[in-house]
Length: 156
Image (cartoon, one colour):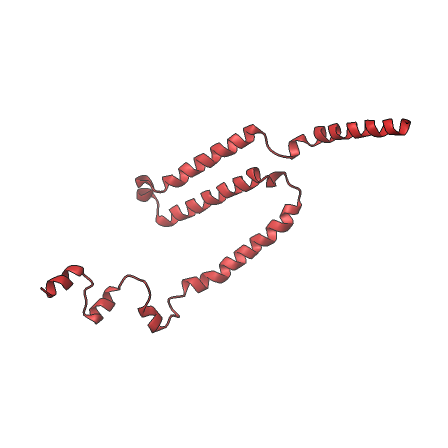
């Protein structure tokens, strides 16, 4: 009989100790989520700012691209850390994340030369059938101007 009462008191004490000791580690508060939401809204506004006339007059297209990538990565980081609760996970997340980062960087570095140099190694037949805008030097070789008004005016 006394063994049962000891087990019952131990069972009732354990959940309250666990709840008190680890309350802040399982997720953020409402204040944290609202702050992250406001930050995401501000970052979205900043990314739309790159389409304004002020941005086009004062910054180059490359700077706009770099800014948009930085804003996008920051937004993704906020979502992953707070809304997917990775900030509160154990250290095993690094075992999964760090190799994937290196693999992603390796993949990009391996594909950049292939994508950048794809026009240098294309056959003439494939080049003729590509969906590109006609080049002026190719139009002069064909004898066509590519203008629809000239084609209709030549044949009454």
